[in-house]
Image (cartoon, rainbow, N blue to C red; front, top):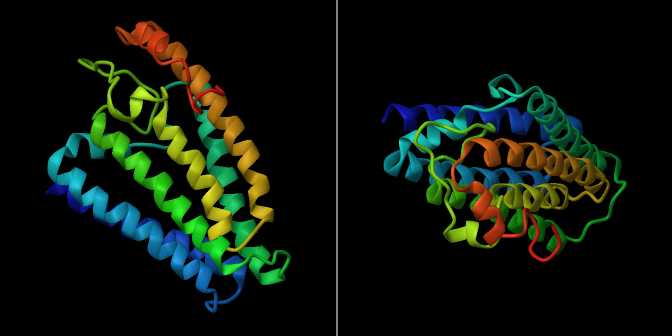
Length: 224
């Protein structure tokens, strides 16, 4: 119950911050794309978090313990800091794009962006459900084992697949094409994070090397 309350409080606080980051650069509350975006984000995060809090609170705790300070490896601190700054810039520029009218994005594309956002968040939450050790930090815990079923059958890092889909969906949901520019550095940060993470997992997680031989692709099937 305590974990559920913490997760709910964290989600509410996150939504307040998210709303400020979006509406302040937009300079208006008359921004239907932002309202739908925030509603989609809320539904796709709060309700699944409540489910995980009831079924596997330890997994939810791992997901809540994230950020640059939580990372033990210096390279990961740098990468996460860059990724957070990139996400912040993506949100701000997308909202400012609405204010300046740089992009003319059809409503159906904005709604497609919301679908991508929900899909990305849904994949990330599915990963947490299927792998209780899917932490927000790069680490190997005592007793951790390799998870090779479910979404891990297709790629080695399905959590980051969800993140990548979400990054594409956010600017479209907010009605911006210019925000897509920040998807590129975001994906680059994910690539370097994965490469460093796999070094750790190969050396410290029993069975991971064999898993990489069975599942060849890290992020995109038949690509990489």
